Image (cartoon, rainbow, N blue to C red; front, side):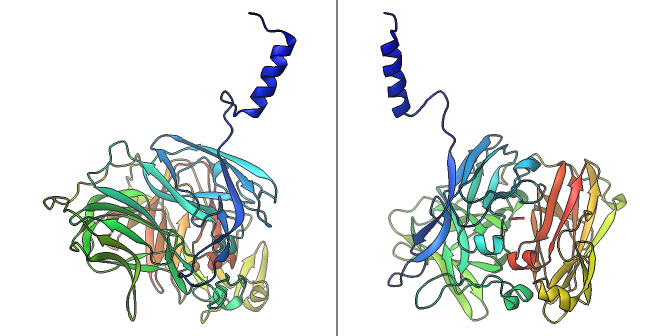
Length: 458
Ligand code: C2O
Ligand code: CU
């Protein structure tokens, strides 16, 4: 049979009504306003900003070496952009307004499309006015599966967060630019959540072996994570497998933006619960629990094998590599005398009036010249010298780096390093990803108030 003009038209009309198969519609990631029950039952729900209307946003899961493409659609009342935290990504896809792309205006969209070289636990979050947009809920988990999964009975992705909610209305406190938060520890919340819910409960079986993928999405809180009713190992940090799993004994810190992959064995008996705890000065608070029921998972197993390594660069000749100091300066009690803002030297008082309380190596905010200009493939050491009275979680974009222990030994791969007051932490960086990359404190108020710098790989 031959197509008449009528047939063609009819077919064309039908096609317009059906999803097109040949030219698949891009998968969207819509940043939008929504409501969610954040506070415990009995409290009102909370107006949030979330990807696809949830905080956290949808879990994105891709196979190692695969491609991720998402069309960001902005339905927020502010411009926005998505950063794919911890991914060794093409620079143009890094999601930093003013450095790698323009912010996406309200009603606009942007197509992200990139490959994922490394397996592990990552996350995505807004990188525009992030101290506000992340606090309102614009973040989600990004999981890259290894080709051969570890021997486990189940897995949970656990996004840890803290919210600052009004105790009566459960509304998000909107005073994001307040000078006290900016100049002190940052925006610390009054309600801890896992996956956007207060004290959620999961199920487990006795002696079950679980992989827990922890992501700290809080603005400023350093969680001290403890385990109760389970015991286990840290097998990866910031997505990258440890060479040897590390037994969890007591609490371990998880700074904003950091991740830890645990493999745990449930030790709580049927009818009891295991818990993930936030250890505070006055004791441990339950973050989420695993109610144990049913039959045991069998005999206790040996310690888990390391996860398969990611294709990270080799570090050689560390002692001969250039050492760059980055001094972390300012904040309450150690107020800045002066610093550069743009190309202008300003007094601490002038800077404070502009909401700048911190500096990285004498610069309060990203200046025209990068902190470091590195030839592609070159090895560098950076020493973060914390001269302030507060913790800072220093994050580099587009790269992972290795911690250097005080004795010079190479430590784990990370993308965010916690530097305590008075402490100096050295890292080893193979600058192998070309482009302009941000380097900043991941206490998001600190980043906004001066702790933002950048480096260039050419
Ligand atoms: Cu989590 Cu500049 O990023
Ligand atoms: Cu900081």
